Image (cartoon, rainbow, N blue to C red; front, side):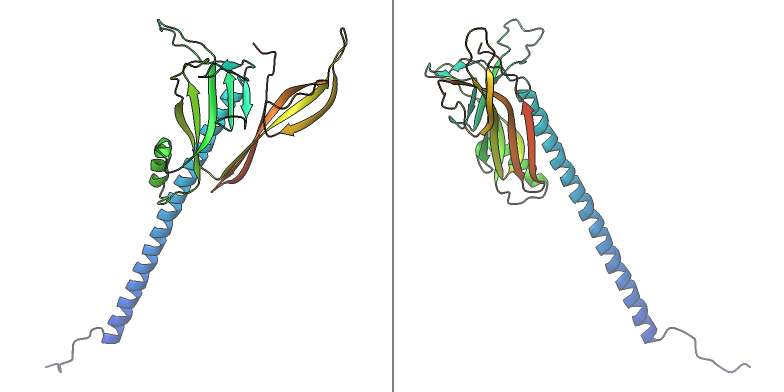
Length: 243
């Protein structure tokens, strides 16, 4: 007979080492997966922010590129200039063309439109769509303001005219708008006007000089966004005679 031999197996130390290695692999895998998920989420949020910025650029460009020098009458019957900059209830308000009618409409409206832009608190009712969007991005307690575009259904307003709001940018820290204005000395009959200078204005209409005429050439928007920093955009203005 063969002598009895004890069965071979793992010692307690070997089992503990195997368990420790398995645990380390599991922890590392969990952290790696968590990092991948966080990176994917951050990429999606940044993509959504860029989409919002593109939407802002498209909407504002569409409005300003179709600016028209047409004054209006407000709800009190007073005449308001075609462009108001820091001169009323809104930081900027102006008239634009190109508001298309439906081809099948039986009651066509004016193709000119009065629009305005203003920052509103993120917790206000008008910013509710922006708040929901930010929370879907994982921003639990949003700060700063949202940028809202307002438009009126009639160019010359009635006493009960109320602007319709549209959120165009979810989160904005600061907005500055300036107007590049060219000064021209008035010329006599048969003579061309002489350019005397160009300056950036932060308010419009400006005080008129009896010897000079002022004509806006371009408008500049400076934005500060929480995630993307400072952004500047400029648009040329087609400033013709007031219609």
